[in-house]
Each structure stands twice: as C-alpha cells, then as structure tokens.
Amino acid sequence: MDSYKSIEKETRIEYVIEKSKFIATACPCTTEEDAANFIARINKEFWDATHNCTAYALGPNQEQQRSSDNGEPSGTAGKPILEVLKKTGITNTAIVVTRYFGGIKLGAAGLIRAYSHSAAEVIKAAPKLLHAPRQLVEVIIDYGYYGTLERFLNANNIYYKKDFQETVILTLYVDPKDTIQLESDITNLTTGQCHWKLKEIQLIALHE
Image 1 (cartoon, rainbow, N blue to C red):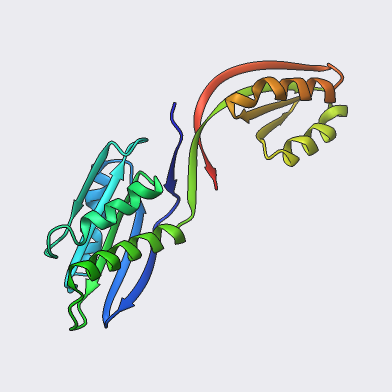
Image 2 (cartoon, rainbow, N blue to C red):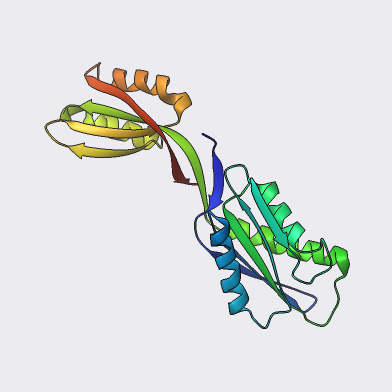
C-alpha cells in the first residue's frame, strides 16, 4: 500500500508578468472524468481567456498523466505544468493555468518559466494531504489509565478514536513500522493492564 500526496481543496493564485495575467487553479481529482469536468468548468469560467493550459496526474504513482498547451507553442505550457506535479510528487490533482495575453510576447523560455511558476505557486498555496497506510490497533483499558494514555497519544501525534463503555476502547491509527514499539510503550504506561489487538491496515488521509 503506497503513500502519496494530494491537495485537499481547490486553490487559485494569480501571477502577472509583462502585462500577461496567469491564473492558476488546482483541483483534487481521482478520475479522468473528474479532471475533464474540472477543466470544462474552468474553460467555461474563463471563456474569454487567450489560453487555458492544463495538466493532471492521477493514481498513487502518477500512473495517469496528461497535458495540453491549448494553442501555446508546443511544450511551453502543458508540459511545464505537468513537470511541476511530477517534481513535487503531488497526484490526484489537475491544474489549469489561464492566460490573458497582455500584448508583450514572452518567447518560449519565458512561457515555460511563467507556466511553471504559476503551477508551482498554486501547488505551494494549496493545503496538502498525505495518504498513508495505517495499522488499526484496538486498545482496551480501564478508565484509570485513560488520562495518561491520552496525553501520550497526543504528544506523539497518534490519531485515535475513543469509545467509552464499561471500559475505554481506543482505535489507534499507527504507522506500521511503529507498531511494535508502541505496543511496548502502552504496555508500560498501563503496567500491562491493557488488551491490544491488531486489526486491518487502511489507507487514510492526514493533513500535512
């Protein structure tokens, strides 16, 4: 189960160079249909733009990639946007960089820099999510140990859910490589008075 990074929500920035305005919009997408719908929506919003250049990467390892120069010289817009996604490792994300031409030609190198910069800035501005495998662990303790264990889990940034019944039932979401050490720590904190049970491994989204 591979870890990967995506953006959490649609984000937009603006960038002006030599009187050309670049508007970069990034959107989380999980399918090509999602990406196509997003691109169509931006095309409709900025119907009067000189260009709406696009790129997206989908899948945990960016297995699906596509880009479009949308009328800009070949390789000066869509590819630079896609390269930003590849370089940052951000996936399940589509970017549209809208350009309103300001009357001054930027040249091929200038276009590449402008589209790259716009894409990089919108990715930088977007809140990120880390999708990572987590071992679910059920820990059952008496109420007397709950305060100590709660402080320990919070101090170590371990996400958990709690269920108060006759005992306290905690469901921990643990990095698989930390499971053995965590079991030892919790056993010590509860002087062995805990019930520890490994459950399934899930891919969950964590704020970065």
